[in-house]
Length: 142
Ligand code: DQA
Image (tube, rainbow, N blue to C red):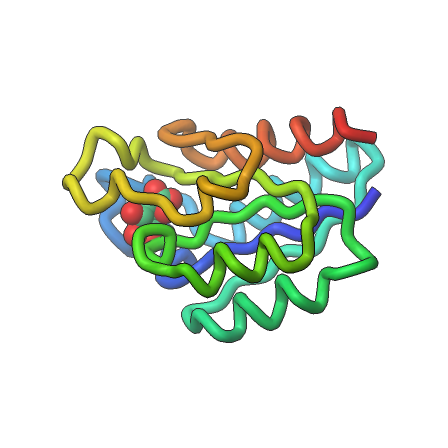
């Protein structure tokens, strides 16, 4: 089973950006955690991060036919991007939405999520562990 992990804008700044909200661990720490978890349950993962909406759309399209699941934290594009929602719908790959912070208890604009109209599950406010839970959810689809 192959799972693609997509992180959107500013998630490469983990550890530096608003550590009171997102914690002190870095994006590399996140990738290491995801890769070691995936290995322990015998799943292939690819971690991808981009600050650019179109690159995220391209990556989702490229997953068509070769990927069993997508874990996506679209960052701020969660609240704005119909293009990312449409890309997920286009490829039809089972997907889980993850947010490190508890988006629903923050500003009003963070309560809108376009990808949630497609994703079969949404995990928020569980920090890095949310990504592992999302991988486990997809693994149960085997
Ligand atoms: C985020 C929440 C978004 O509102 C924000 O724009 C992010 C990160 C999270 O993981 O909590 O960049 O998706």
